[in-house]
Image (cartoon, rainbow, N blue to C red; front, side):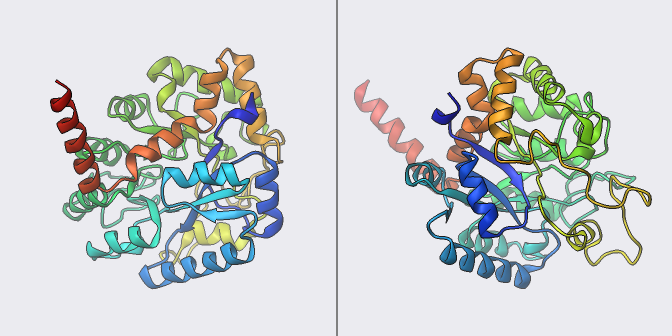
Length: 346
């Protein structure tokens, strides 16, 4: 049953107010990966954290911060929605590798190496030439592995994504994208990338953003579930989740900030166009409070078992976070204890 599952949305940037938090709670979602920043530098990122501190204080009966996978379980037990933070760009660490640890201590659990454009770390999916992971990027990947900050390559180009998968000692995620076999958009991922991701224990979060879907805003639930099923046939169920990329009730100014930041004087339309420059229409079967339940039930109708559908709507995210958010020294210490215990038993 849906009520027995751990439900996690692997990416949202909706208009965070009390009404929306209450809707999330009513929807049965136990945790959301909330985008903290897009193009903000380190100082502005701290301001975003401060703004969220106020939200937690004012809505403590509904939401709580997530610093570990165990906090998600706690949120479920308390009837609250856990909020875990991610950055859709590497701008919070600027050109200072020491800020990786600082941001992780503040509660930044996930960070993309780039957002569409070339960054100091990697190449974005809209660049004409993909030069791969930079020298700085290689060191940041190592540091993110060490402190337990998850690498996200949702907006990165193919070579950069494949190199990140290979360079990282720990599994990475693509929190919100779809396979190109379903919709051939620059933001989506090839079979090669998805297979490489899964082979290293990574996780793909399926996006509900219409520009990433077959037939856009007219994509039907059964089409979405068929895409999930085909991907499961390719790499197995264990590497799949949901990262809706839902941006509900956000004004046009937010969309323009996402697309342009401070880097362009001219409007960058991303996956839109001059004739289609606004937010795409939301999917009627997902935008409301029953969105995740609809996906769960749609997956069952597509042929997934209750256990498999539960994995996809949150179970896989939970296990991925449980493994990935532990800093390396703690992970090594735990490994050594387990090894010593095994030797004693032997």
